[in-house]
Image (tube, rainbow, N blue to C red; front, side, top):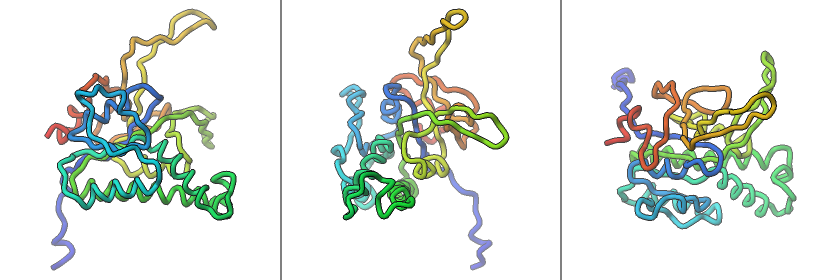
Length: 252
């Protein structure tokens, strides 16, 4: 058979997304609105979701071995879950760092000194996150599951050769590992409070009515993108998935 005979239009598949933002803005609650979710928890964020609507979850992981066991169970065993949520990759990053440092026989004081230094510890850390991303990709392709990575945010200064330095939000984790959750995902969203300033001169203050906005388009203020043509802020309403109107597959 000619290789050209295998050409076809790619079909829609479940979403792979990263949701980031400051603490307490509803990242976990938003992830819980995806179809039939199961949570892998590096932290116990589900306490924020009311018990009557709280999704199923594995026990909170305490070691890197727990991560692989839970991912393997989802890949190999039959189940009815349609969405995997990992909450959070920020805490998972901390767990992986501790694993690398604690298992190094030379007992380094930090990840920078691990595995002989010279960036080897950071490279191993990125490799572990790569394994997580690969397992998530298998679940997306073979089990038709949506994949949601939850992350905490931090600010960083960007210095480009053709612009003045500026500050933006990024994922709070070791920099070499961020690309696994930003480059090869369908959507990277940033949750923020809709905020206004009041006052004159230097005594202005920020105020908000509590409205949450999800930013999924490219902007200099934060890491965000999407492959669905979304070009506007999306209002996040409790217990409602705000992306269904843009990604009909989520409503099936």
